[in-house]
Image (tube, helix red, strand yellow):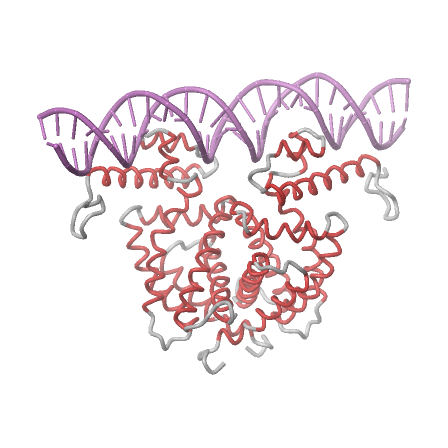
Length: 218
Length: 218
DNA sequence: AGGCTAATGACAGCCACTGACAGTTGACAA
DNA sequence: TTGTCAACTGTCAGTGGCTGTCATTAGCCT
């Protein structure tokens, strides 16, 4: 009754490894083609041909072109959730979110690097930001992620999101600020992890001042 | 040298009126079909047939199915911008945004009602929220709108967005909160203007409390 | 070795969307 | 009024994303 996903130390079977290789190859080829010749100018047939599989197989690994272009973003996501859950309980929600995202960037980068070259990963952000169809899909995914964060924050504070608006609002504030940050980073000149961290910190620090009554005396 | 868009009091020519009628008819037919049988289950051919024009003509009025589904949202948008610009200079940015959006809802509703029945308009929000492709496109548009609001806010305060992060962050906070509000409204049971106004106010009021260090003593 | 099943390829088809060209119709002036 | 021009429209052909179906291949397990 030993299944393929077997015991912890056991290496997955040939079938699984082959699948993983095909998946990663399709992912890399997609990003490579998208970032060099453009997302819309790249056809699925091209990607399939580059990996030497049929077009039908591409769609068995990815629900569509969009998913192939955005899949790389998921690789780091779980690390952020983990970092958030690991924040000490005494931190205020926004403080925990801030610390989690700042320390999360490193873990994400490493996780991604195992599958895709880092520069390709970074270039992908620019491509997403400047491709309407991809930006739209990305924002929807981010919106979905925000809902998961809401749940984590609410649990942290022992609150019910249906009766207390604060978890949702706090996450909404955080999500809004992260979105501007991401946009400026992706469109700006310095596409590096350090630049992202600095921008993130700067914008999160600006939340309270931006809510002040009088900006002149800030 | 009198062009077709002529003098202010002048009524547009037959050609223009015909165009407007076709546009509105396509818009209404689209929303009607989308909200009754679903967005994806509706083909462009169906819409064209319902208005008795060719499929090609549909695409001359709308860039795609998505645009037809979301076009109705634009009808009220300009009213919000106007309301925001009209807010007195002594109001703090977030206060001005709050007041503008609350008073903007009425003007929007009226502007929309001239083209599309109100209940159809309201039902459209539910459809958008529950249709992945539409939600994605909507969020991208909202992101774009946020950038325009940034410019208005920065101008109000006489600031340069490139040197002072506060205009962008303030708008990001506002946009984030409006997004949660919209989501809860569209998915909730009460699809009315009043419900929207109440939800908006409640969530914007929760911004400061949600930023507090200690939620227990809030 | 041989049967089972997951993975793949090949093919046909739907639908959103686009370019090209020809026909029709409102606008405007002679 | 009538002729000319430009705008609007319909038709047709084609591209590309995406899906269902079915036969074939290839890892897996006894």
